[in-house]
Structures are given as structure tokens and as C-alpha cells.
Image (tube, rainbow, N blue to C red):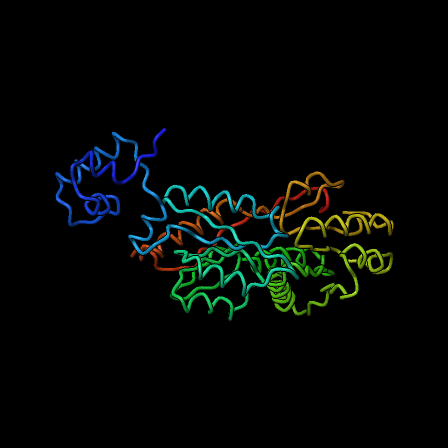
Length: 331
């Protein structure tokens, strides 16, 4: 089948190539009767404008760069679905950039983003530094960060307030007499852990205590399990142990069982980032349901508003709520 081109449309409508280009790109200098004639020719021939050529005419590429850590694919699946669905509605393409710890340098990704002349960037990466963000904003590229509270003229954010989430939960625990709370370090998600530590510290301080239950994993330990199996044992027990990811929650579950510590009778376990695997564990692990799909959808919608300089964009910080799902690992 012959590929329909802009030349075919111009011939069918009996207008110049420039006129067809103006109609495709929404120019207001085309007469209404001419616009209708060109649109009828496009529909009759089934012409699909080339996104790259159309973007160049508009000084836009209609492409959004998405930056995610390779290690977080499992957690970002629904976020990406939300991004893709809204991107389709507003006719944007997504260009995926992945970071791999110890292999991919963020500076290389930033250089590729700048070279590709994308219209905007969505970032899900809590290891991205302020200096790296500034490198992008120097080129006036609108950015939406998923997960971190941050905003300025060219940066917006869509997030769940993990500090407040854990503050509320810890306060409730303390009021019930569960004062020995531990948080396991997560080296893959330092910014999230920082929020959790701050929330726990605030809850303890407001109750006249100091939070000392941060379980920092020594650098020589390759995994949470390797550390926890030598740490969690009879005599070193907590009322509640909190992890950020399900794999760490499983490590706590296994090491507690090996140490003959009963969950939840002797020690409760909570995984902040809930997943389907938490419900498969025995006992099932309590966690917080985060609206992953909405994080992606709202991040893309916020970015489209920033790109179009929408007057409705007043606050570039969008906070989403969460739901605590109690299961068998808590009483």
C-alpha cells in the first residue's frame, strides 16, 4: 500500500505544502474554508502527520523523557501505565531512560535527554541530586518528579508524604504502648528512608522520647537478610519493625522465624510499600497501599499543563493519599 504523504494531501486539497503544514500545526493564519478543505483531504486519504516533522515545525518534539531506576521496574509498572495513558490522550510519546546502579551515570542520561530535545521530563529516581536537576532546568526543560516534594518555576512534583504517613502510624503505635519501633535501612531508596526517619523522629520527639531504632546495614553486608539474620535474635526484640520494600519485609519474616520470634505475637512487621507479595507471605504482611497508577497519570497531566503554560497550574506540588492495609503481621 502506498504511504500517504503531505504532498498527496496538498494535491487533493489543491493548496500549497505550506498551507497543509499550517493546518496540521494549528496555525490561525489559514482561512476557515481552506482549513476545512485540507482537513477533508486528510480524512479522505487517511493521512497521519509525522510526529517528528510536526514537532520540528512547532519547535517541539512531542516527546517526554521518562527516567526510572532499572531496579524499581516492579514498583513502577503501574506508574508507567498511568503516564502512558495520559500521554496518549495529549498525543505525547515517551522515551524511556533507565539508570542502573554502578553502571549508568545520571550525567550521561541528562546529556542524552538534552541532545534529544524532549519537551519535558518525568523522573522517578530518589537518588537524583539537586545539582543534576539544575543541569536540566538550565535548559528550561519542564520537569515533574514523582515521589519527592520539590517545586520551582520549571519543576513540579507528585508524591505521597511518607514522612507524614509514618509519623501518623508511629504516633498510633506509641499511644498503644508499642514504643520500641525499628526501621530497616534501604540503600536503594535513600530519600524515602530519609522521609521515614524524619517522621519517626518527629513522632518520638512529640512523645518526649528519642528515636534510636534505625537499623543501618553495614557496607560489608550484601543484603538485608545477611545483616538481619545476625541481628534479629532473642533478647534484641522490637515491638514493630518497619521496612520500605517487600523483599526486606520477607527478610525480617524469615530471620524472625529462624530466631524463633513469633510474628505478630512477639514482634509486629509493617512494609511501607505494599505489594502482591506481601499478601502471599505467611503470615501476610501489613502495608500501605500507594496509588501508583494515579502518581503516573497525575504527573503526566501536571507536565502537560506546565508545557502549555496553563493558567490553572498554581501549585506544582500534588500530594496523594494512601490506605493502610492491616494483615496478619500486625495485631
